[in-house]
Length: 191
Image 1 (cartoon, helix red, strand yellow):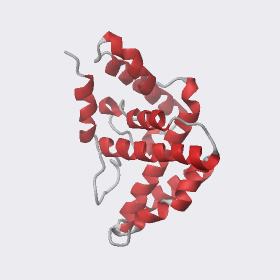
Image 2 (cartoon, rainbow, N blue to C red):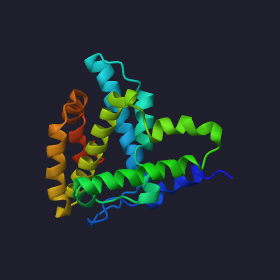
Image 3 (cartoon, one colour):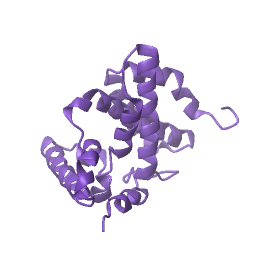
Image 4 (cartoon, rainbow, N blue to C red):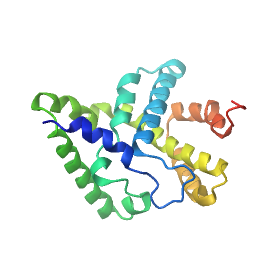
Protein backbone atom coordinates (compact mmCIF):
# COMPACT_ATOMS: atom_id res chain seq x y z
CA UNK A 1 0.00 0.00 0.00
CA UNK A 2 1.24 3.46 -0.92
CA UNK A 3 -0.27 6.29 1.10
CA UNK A 4 1.54 9.30 -0.44
CA UNK A 5 -1.47 10.77 -2.23
CA UNK A 6 -3.83 10.07 0.65
CA UNK A 7 -1.42 11.99 2.88
CA UNK A 8 -1.33 14.91 0.40
CA UNK A 9 -5.12 15.08 0.47
CA UNK A 10 -4.98 15.63 4.24
CA UNK A 11 -3.76 19.19 3.64
CA UNK A 12 -7.38 20.28 3.78
CA UNK A 13 -7.41 19.45 7.51
CA UNK A 14 -4.41 21.63 8.40
CA UNK A 15 -5.57 25.13 9.28
CA UNK A 16 -3.28 28.11 8.95
CA UNK A 17 -3.06 31.21 11.15
CA UNK A 18 -3.63 29.19 14.32
CA UNK A 19 -2.93 32.08 16.70
CA UNK A 20 -5.31 34.45 14.92
CA UNK A 21 -9.09 34.90 14.94
CA UNK A 22 -10.10 34.38 11.31
CA UNK A 23 -13.31 35.48 9.64
CA UNK A 24 -12.67 32.71 7.11
CA UNK A 25 -10.48 29.73 8.03
CA UNK A 26 -7.74 28.92 5.52
CA UNK A 27 -6.54 25.37 5.02
CA UNK A 28 -3.09 24.37 3.89
CA UNK A 29 -4.66 22.99 0.72
CA UNK A 30 -6.24 26.36 -0.12
CA UNK A 31 -3.02 28.20 0.62
CA UNK A 32 -0.96 25.85 -1.54
CA UNK A 33 -3.25 26.17 -4.54
CA UNK A 34 -3.38 29.96 -4.23
CA UNK A 35 0.40 30.10 -3.89
CA UNK A 36 0.71 27.98 -7.04
CA UNK A 37 -1.58 30.38 -8.96
CA UNK A 38 0.47 33.38 -7.89
CA UNK A 39 3.85 31.70 -8.40
CA UNK A 40 2.78 30.70 -11.91
CA UNK A 41 1.70 34.29 -12.58
CA UNK A 42 5.04 35.63 -11.31
CA UNK A 43 6.87 33.29 -13.71
CA UNK A 44 4.67 34.40 -16.62
CA UNK A 45 5.25 38.05 -15.68
CA UNK A 46 8.99 37.40 -15.55
CA UNK A 47 8.93 35.84 -19.01
CA UNK A 48 6.53 38.24 -20.75
CA UNK A 49 7.40 41.55 -19.09
CA UNK A 50 11.04 41.12 -18.07
CA UNK A 51 12.33 38.74 -20.75
CA UNK A 52 13.27 35.93 -18.39
CA UNK A 53 13.09 32.21 -19.07
CA UNK A 54 11.21 30.66 -16.16
CA UNK A 55 9.33 27.39 -16.51
CA UNK A 56 5.92 28.51 -15.15
CA UNK A 57 4.69 24.93 -14.82
CA UNK A 58 7.75 23.95 -12.74
CA UNK A 59 7.36 27.05 -10.57
CA UNK A 60 3.65 26.32 -10.01
CA UNK A 61 4.36 22.70 -9.12
CA UNK A 62 7.09 23.68 -6.66
CA UNK A 63 4.59 26.07 -5.06
CA UNK A 64 1.92 23.39 -4.90
CA UNK A 65 4.28 21.15 -2.90
CA UNK A 66 6.04 23.86 -0.86
CA UNK A 67 4.22 23.24 2.43
CA UNK A 68 3.34 19.54 2.09
CA UNK A 69 5.55 18.52 5.08
CA UNK A 70 3.11 20.49 7.25
CA UNK A 71 0.72 17.55 6.92
CA UNK A 72 2.95 16.02 9.61
CA UNK A 73 4.20 19.15 11.40
CA UNK A 74 1.10 21.30 11.26
CA UNK A 75 1.32 24.99 10.46
CA UNK A 76 3.75 26.24 13.06
CA UNK A 77 2.93 29.92 13.69
CA UNK A 78 5.58 32.35 12.41
CA UNK A 79 6.38 33.80 15.86
CA UNK A 80 7.25 30.30 17.05
CA UNK A 81 9.00 29.08 13.88
CA UNK A 82 11.31 32.11 13.87
CA UNK A 83 11.57 32.60 17.65
CA UNK A 84 15.30 31.87 17.51
CA UNK A 85 17.87 30.53 15.08
CA UNK A 86 17.96 27.32 17.11
CA UNK A 87 14.19 26.93 16.82
CA UNK A 88 14.31 27.52 13.04
CA UNK A 89 17.18 25.06 12.67
CA UNK A 90 15.40 22.33 14.65
CA UNK A 91 12.16 22.90 12.77
CA UNK A 92 14.13 22.58 9.53
CA UNK A 93 15.33 19.16 10.67
CA UNK A 94 11.76 18.14 11.46
CA UNK A 95 10.67 19.27 7.98
CA UNK A 96 13.46 17.17 6.43
CA UNK A 97 12.25 14.14 8.40
CA UNK A 98 8.69 14.81 7.24
CA UNK A 99 9.88 14.87 3.61
CA UNK A 100 11.65 11.54 4.07
CA UNK A 101 8.55 10.07 5.67
CA UNK A 102 6.44 11.29 2.75
CA UNK A 103 8.83 9.81 0.22
CA UNK A 104 8.69 6.40 1.90
CA UNK A 105 4.93 6.45 1.24
CA UNK A 106 5.72 6.16 -2.48
CA UNK A 107 6.94 3.21 -4.49
CA UNK A 108 10.74 3.36 -4.85
CA UNK A 109 10.57 4.16 -8.56
CA UNK A 110 8.67 7.44 -7.91
CA UNK A 111 10.67 8.81 -4.99
CA UNK A 112 13.28 10.84 -6.84
CA UNK A 113 10.62 12.41 -9.05
CA UNK A 114 8.77 13.71 -5.98
CA UNK A 115 11.95 14.50 -4.03
CA UNK A 116 12.58 17.12 -6.71
CA UNK A 117 9.41 18.91 -5.53
CA UNK A 118 9.55 18.23 -1.80
CA UNK A 119 13.29 18.95 -1.43
CA UNK A 120 14.22 20.96 -4.53
CA UNK A 121 17.84 21.19 -5.61
CA UNK A 122 19.98 24.33 -5.74
CA UNK A 123 19.28 24.43 -9.49
CA UNK A 124 15.75 25.55 -8.60
CA UNK A 125 16.95 28.65 -6.70
CA UNK A 126 15.40 31.17 -9.12
CA UNK A 127 12.10 29.30 -9.21
CA UNK A 128 12.09 29.01 -5.42
CA UNK A 129 12.60 32.76 -5.15
CA UNK A 130 9.29 33.18 -6.98
CA UNK A 131 7.63 30.57 -4.76
CA UNK A 132 8.82 32.45 -1.66
CA UNK A 133 7.51 35.73 -3.08
CA UNK A 134 4.17 34.08 -3.92
CA UNK A 135 3.96 32.49 -0.46
CA UNK A 136 4.48 35.83 1.26
CA UNK A 137 2.15 37.60 -1.13
CA UNK A 138 -0.60 35.07 -0.38
CA UNK A 139 -0.11 35.69 3.34
CA UNK A 140 -0.45 39.41 2.65
CA UNK A 141 -3.59 38.82 0.57
CA UNK A 142 -5.06 36.82 3.47
CA UNK A 143 -4.38 39.84 5.72
CA UNK A 144 -6.02 42.19 3.19
CA UNK A 145 -9.10 40.01 2.93
CA UNK A 146 -9.44 39.72 6.71
CA UNK A 147 -9.03 43.49 7.03
CA UNK A 148 -11.64 44.06 4.31
CA UNK A 149 -14.02 41.88 6.36
CA UNK A 150 -13.48 44.18 9.35
CA UNK A 151 -11.11 41.89 11.23
CA UNK A 152 -8.46 44.02 12.95
CA UNK A 153 -6.70 40.87 14.21
CA UNK A 154 -4.50 40.85 11.09
CA UNK A 155 -3.29 44.49 11.22
CA UNK A 156 0.15 43.72 12.62
CA UNK A 157 0.58 40.64 10.45
CA UNK A 158 -0.26 42.76 7.42
CA UNK A 159 2.35 45.39 8.33
CA UNK A 160 5.02 42.78 9.05
CA UNK A 161 4.27 40.88 5.85
CA UNK A 162 4.28 44.07 3.80
CA UNK A 163 7.77 44.87 5.14
CA UNK A 164 8.93 41.40 4.11
CA UNK A 165 7.45 41.89 0.65
CA UNK A 166 9.13 45.29 0.31
CA UNK A 167 12.47 43.70 1.23
CA UNK A 168 12.27 41.09 -1.53
CA UNK A 169 14.13 42.06 -4.65
CA UNK A 170 11.69 40.63 -7.17
CA UNK A 171 10.52 42.72 -10.09
CA UNK A 172 7.81 40.18 -10.90
CA UNK A 173 6.39 40.67 -7.41
CA UNK A 174 6.45 44.46 -7.78
CA UNK A 175 4.59 44.15 -11.08
CA UNK A 176 1.95 41.85 -9.56
CA UNK A 177 1.48 44.18 -6.60
CA UNK A 178 0.99 47.18 -8.87
CA UNK A 179 -1.26 45.58 -11.48
CA UNK A 180 -3.18 42.80 -9.71
CA UNK A 181 -3.13 43.27 -5.93
CA UNK A 182 -5.63 46.18 -5.73
CA UNK A 183 -8.43 43.93 -7.03
CA UNK A 184 -8.24 41.76 -3.92
CA UNK A 185 -10.06 44.40 -1.87
CA UNK A 186 -12.94 44.74 -4.35
CA UNK A 187 -16.35 43.17 -4.06
CA UNK A 188 -17.46 40.68 -6.74
CA UNK A 189 -19.65 43.37 -8.34
CA UNK A 190 -16.74 45.83 -8.38
CA UNK A 191 -14.53 43.25 -10.08
